[in-house]
Image (cartoon, rainbow, N blue to C red; front, side, top):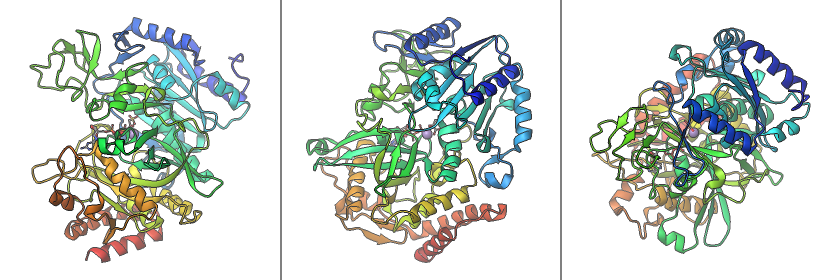
Length: 591
Ligand code: GTP
Ligand code: SPV
Ligand code: MN
């Protein structure tokens, strides 16, 4: 091991963990293509990975997780801070010593007969972590999702500022599945899962839960936000960050294809990130965002040539598919809404024979995913690797609300924007285990990902705002692509047509368009949302409806907000006074 690093904190932590889990073999991941190729071959020889048609899908593989292990497990995710108060009312909490003991008992000897893979992950500019795992699938995914390799160890030098990650796939026992974050020890331990967000420890565990805590201590922010660049006909680029809960449209918005008329006029969208933003103030006083990831772990179902051709193109090489349907006729993959030709000779995500003509169950799991290299994406931004990040003009919050929230509204100022983020709510999706379609509060889309007391997190947002010149601060908006009519049909076509809303948002940021003041903020005048050339007809009446604000519904909403805030006061958390003031204003406004 000393050949790779002489860093004492790294060596002693790893030696400790080797003594705990007792692997038969130990492999350092150096990030080389040869090593990755050898691991793919080994994964295929054991059946862990399935090699797909290499002519149609070069370097692409399929993996199926256990049927009870297909989504993040929020009920089994813990923030292990010294006190319960530090974790706040919205997180599960465990006392760190107790948690370590329980996790080490599960992890003890669990690598016997297995190989331990050790990969340093992270980027030059950002943060460094090392994940120990006994899963080739995890190694291959991490090699796509992060900048992995020995250069990272060199960059770390002798520092002990790195995140320790231990993953034990062990036996898949749901009752012993735990995803534990120890923000005060820069440590993550994940046991008894082999699925995405539970085990790719660089993603939600590090880049959001641990990083949000680091950002709080160090004066920056880790957010569940996409980053896109919007080029307008004037040739200038503006950047937008958007926080939507899991499976609520971040990847789709980040890779948006402008409607024909817009394209002709010179509009273009570039993707900087599709899931996570690290945000800090730049020397010019504006907020800048980087994407700490190197790939996309995207929802497969619903991705198609029309909804998101850029994401689809990104999956054509070097991609790992998880829990999709395997088409045996041509050894490719399929998922619901990929096209209208489901395979007839296939294996479904559970590993059973599947025929699209007669099937009554989906061929792909609703939370099946692709892990695709960011560089494959046809619209990847030329700023993707810029270590300084991109300057943010607007921040968007949004979720799935069938009735309440209008298509778009703008907050009155930063503090009101933070309030709008704090009261976000959305219907749950298949991205997390549990019921789907239930409305729940998900502040800033961070409910499952905030590594400390959410009330302190809101305070952190407000404190950042205080350091910003209001002229330079991003403007904050809320969007809702998911308003439905009485029959349950979406009232807004969404996808590429969302550019019509982004266009208004940028014009608002630049003071180029008026708006209507409502009790909840500023909404567009209907005539300022350009519907020219829209394919799925949106009538004037329909547009008026989705821009409308119903005071009665908002009065009901205020009760929901009061209940949610009460959770904090009951727990002993301190909701910032600014947010309580904003709440009073809202209640007065909707009277
Ligand atoms: P995570 O990776 O879980 O964080 O999800 P995400 O926020 O990146 O969501 P994604 O873009 O993958 O979209 C999830 C689902 O929402 C897919 O089924 C999409 O088809 C659907 N979706 C995305 N954008 C829109 C939209 O504008 N309108 C409608 N109606 N559906 C959308
Ligand atoms: C999400 O659930 O928000 C995801 C997928 O992006 S996972 O990596 O599983 O968290
Ligand atoms: Mn996500």
